[in-house]
Length: 204
Image (cartoon, rainbow, N blue to C red; front, side, top):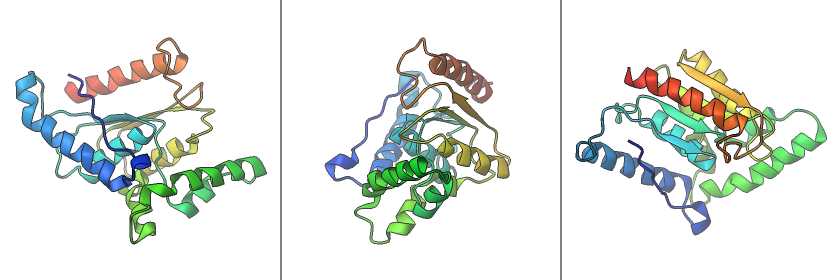
């Protein structure tokens, strides 16, 4: 069964943790009502794209002890790092990439607008800081030419998961942001294959 969840958006004055709270509440609802839908509420795989990918990862990593039903997580080109210095370190030394990373920084600061301690908030909203050896199997799909959320976000998450020996796949595919918009694209076809393998792992 697939459950599609909406959450409040930052453009409406909602901060990152409030958006995550919406997904937290939705997950509790799914677990409580799974039997009514003839679904297995003990095996849940959050899946999100872009900002939703960031939130899906945070849900799976930050609440792993509470939501033991989360057995895997799928992240399509999501932001994995929001700490300013770490983002700067992710960019190469060429001028264009440094400039685009600076633009990314300016466009993501609103996530913690309402926080008193913004540095702690950005750390909290960075999935890479919540990876532990108990994190669920993780599938990341990312376009190699993504000019909005750079592929380095996928790479730093993969490095963190590798350090903790977490089962994961970092699938870098031809394409840009929203590389899966067409079902026939190489991105979509590769992602479908990888998702089937993750589902088989979780439900075996």
